Image 1 (cartoon, rainbow, N blue to C red):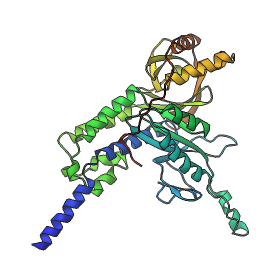
Image 2: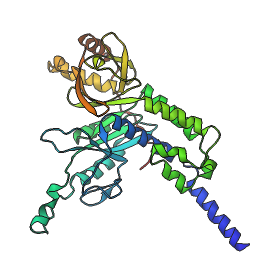
Image 3: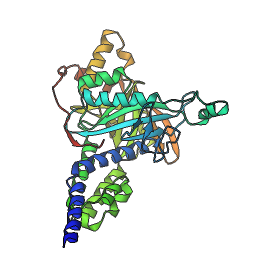
Image 4: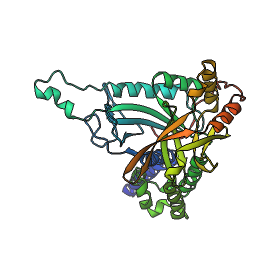
Length: 359
């Protein structure tokens, strides 16, 4: 009788450990969504080297081992530049990211970027074996569902940290609705460690144990998977310096990506159209930042040098093509006229309250 009670207690503790983890799973799925979108944009999961741990999940730094949400290598070689490695944090918060998160990431990134290359305590060829290892150019990036506070943006810009926001993104909102429906069909009171491990790979979620599934789980998973496979992505660079993540639902013909119009749809959401005003993509960017960018250019007589193009790498099967999206002059002027009339940004005092975060 005592033995049965002990077993029952252990089982109850195990269930309690893995129940109530809806937030964790949503955060993990947000990471996996971004990973898939980056792969579609030309980034590879095949990252190797002495700095990468054996399980390919952590990076050795100068003083510690860092566990980023994930890291990717750009699949295209660039002359005279070491392979590009993105070191990323993905934050699915319900508030803009503030200084605290950025400072923590900055500290970890500095440690990773100062990884010791040559062991001067070794002699002969052993000292220089590391020269044959892959050496990367590190690119720190923070992805945020709800954007960033202005002071956080300033700190990131000062230290070369890139940032991508999905504020008001209609496509990302569609993905998250389907994600919520999927997570709602999970019976977390029946969750075990083996169930959690399945969420490390989107392809393995279908293997969730039946006891951990609620009615309608398979349909919700199919809807989520079908839409996610439908969405494509491009990583673009506005005016050679500002990264944007362009999302779209249909394949883009080559003729679409030559001359484009930028249209401010709402808040921080911008639409890309071809010359006949047919939408083919969207991206999120701070409208107040663009307003200040325009004002900066106007004061210095540089208005002709800004909002001129977005460079993207288009991936089709085994081909990667660099394309310059020339911004239509009429849409540029319309955008300038609209944005210069919006109010200036104030710095709200907000806290970072995670609704779904991992790490």
